[in-house]
Image (spheres, rainbow over the protein chains, first blue to last red):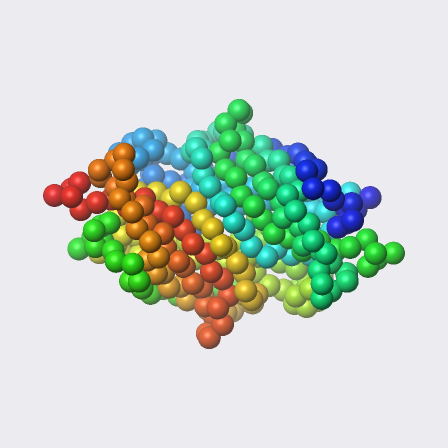
Length: 152
Length: 152
């Protein structure tokens, strides 16, 4: 059963899957979108503030969106997402290293029906990304979610 | 001459290049990180709130980081960036369509020396992404920037 705007309550938490990020993938992503030596070159990374090769924070963000979409929006009983509006409070708390497994949780932080469109509402999700017990990233994202009343 | 923390003044603006985004690239990015029909399937996109295939906002963000790094950090007289801390106020104002050219500008919005590390400071950049005259995305990013006094 699809998750519509009406089905979400503030405080609801959802596990949205895991992903293990390989070294080759970290380097390939960084070469394309964030070509800094501490993300692309193991030797050069030793002289950086990180002391070793680490994933681009942008890569961690992208993987968290991939899990949100693939495991929470696109699943059979998934979120009736109509689009994204923006994000706030994106923070990288700890580096992500090759071979580490990201785990993503989302919490419904706020929801408001649209005043101009009766088929949708606005939902603020707080997204947490963990590797084992370490919280590596947090972000608030704003999504447009379809109302059940628009399809029934 | 490298741009160190001391060389930046609040209000300074920098043009950090352009990038034309192709349809194939929009679809390939979305299949990997944001697999929603309005980003991956031209036919399905016609029924979405966008009415046509549009780039994932995450893709626009990634391309703006690529330009920031490739054209502003990695150039010969580039920014002495030591890493990123996070972002706020990420907003997508208008969709980006296949074949459109993104143009990125950054402005120094705030700077503060680190109190615990005398080799670095914190700089807040306001980043604007345009296609022609339309502002399609804005974001504030927080970077750690090396001080000139640490290398002289």
